[in-house]
Length: 216
Length: 216
DNA sequence: GGCCTGCATTTGGTATACCGTTTTCCAAAA
DNA sequence: TTTTGGAAAACGGTATACCAAATGCAGGCC
Image 1: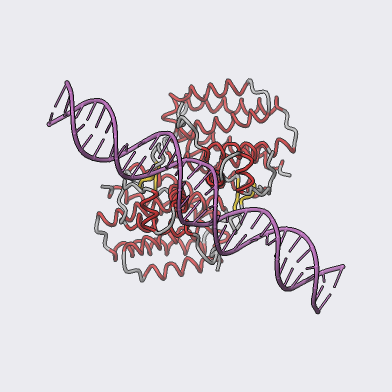
Image 2 (image 1 turned 180 degrees about the vertical axis):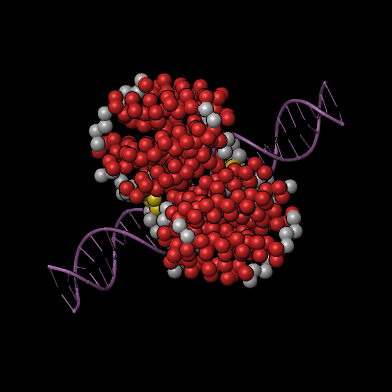
């Protein structure tokens, strides 16, 4: 256990509930998130809601208009392209940095892999996929690198969630593809050089890019 | 004219004033920034101060303790190392992406260069240096890349400011070094391929790393 | 019919007040 | 002298209230 301040503040729980609404698709793209309305719905005052919206903006799930009104973010194919370029810059780097440390934290990756193999929905596969990558980022021992990546993570989740809702992806197929790729990565971390890990992650991200044509 | 909401909110001006205090060294490393005290000093209520502190945390100038108290960030040599690794990942990439667009925005770079040559203090050189790099990031046409870089910029400024105050760097020398390096970069953008621009920026950042030993 | 105008309503920005928790500091005991 | 106990002060989290600006709609004007 780690980030549990014993009682999540109302700001945090407001952020969590809004995040869930957005990622699940309950709050559609472009929806206005008025402070008062959200506050009333969540049963808290406007102050925590305000902070939650600020947090979600940082995560890329919400955007503010020039006059300060908050809307659920809209994503375009260009957004996907931007995310791709940045993953390609950050994740291979993280893999190289993490390689020396990863011989120990491999256990976390393998546990993730085991859970992934039993996943029962595309959403679950997606979540575990991102978690797998985050484990590597955490092992990179570069706090700022992790922070930068996290500021992209929610957007990726949002993107993938929408994709899964518009195209009906096959759970089985997605699961097998993901876990096989991750398996190779874990093996690489266990036996290969940092440079090899970097190269492999680069390939992995390049492969992920193939999802792009699915943009609606 | 662009991002001028006609009257900066009190949150924004509070953030500006705090940022200036921190970057100028008026607020020393580790100083507690209590909401009430800051609010009283700036003549506003706690709410805008709260948001300003949140903003500055995002910029890396302030850090919160587990119990939510804000302190002026302390920087270690490892922080410099992290910033270096990330600049090395982001800026060459930005240069490559910007190269095709830069033939037009070169004017901005050249104007920056001209002003730099007349700079009269190390602080001014530093500020213009970062501005030069930011112009390139802006020309990369990747909003997220720019955003990630900006989240490092204030920290760089903080770092360099402290460096200049502890070691008495020569204005003349710093200025000449900086402007000569930037001159080469502008030439490259005007005549070379994206790949060449990327390589050159990589060299530039690697050279910048030589400042590291100056850590106290 | 389309466009401008003005008012009612909504919305965000900010000040103030209250409460529980954390810090701080001093005094008493080991 | 050091440690510890506890109380007072400081601080952050949040609710509420007020105001100015922005929005949206309806009615009038061209």
